[in-house]
Image (spheres, one colour):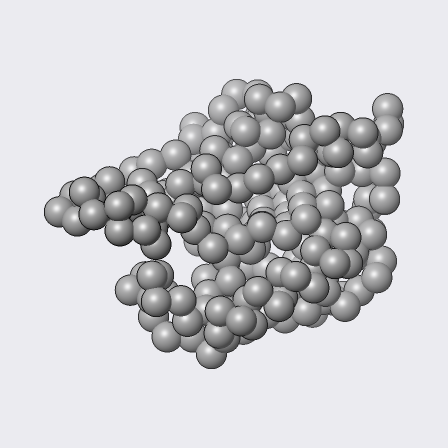
Length: 215
């Protein structure tokens, strides 16, 4: 669920008295594994590339946001997104938001400054937007991290149980808050267990969605 250095004493011991360095390990994306070759082979000449970001705040502890890091990784491997839909409930002025994103995203970036909804028919349910506008030939990547477990669970359940949606979403990044000892200082107590989390991600992967633990 995080970079393995967080759980290995030799990986974090030297950071005990250095909070910033501990946070670097906690927020590192180096553990993520992608099959870039498969992604390339699945693309058609007319495929659209779509990134849907639920919880898109760019104010991230004086660091580059993990989402921007992820988008840069995709770009380095040849995937420049045509559409980036950034949903964020906390109000931010567009000029401030656009000052924090790289210039290559200006034409693709849609700042949607509202909270997402789980009602399948609501205009602010990103999954409804995907179902209404895209198809199986498009590359669709979704990140969910809104720090509202009940709403997150409702959205994940929609993805897991909707065959049409499962055919559309290729990669799914989700920070699933569960009772993991190494991260409970940041998450507190939650109702889901580590086993619940493993079962969820296994289910999504078995149904064809490349599901990744997010930071």
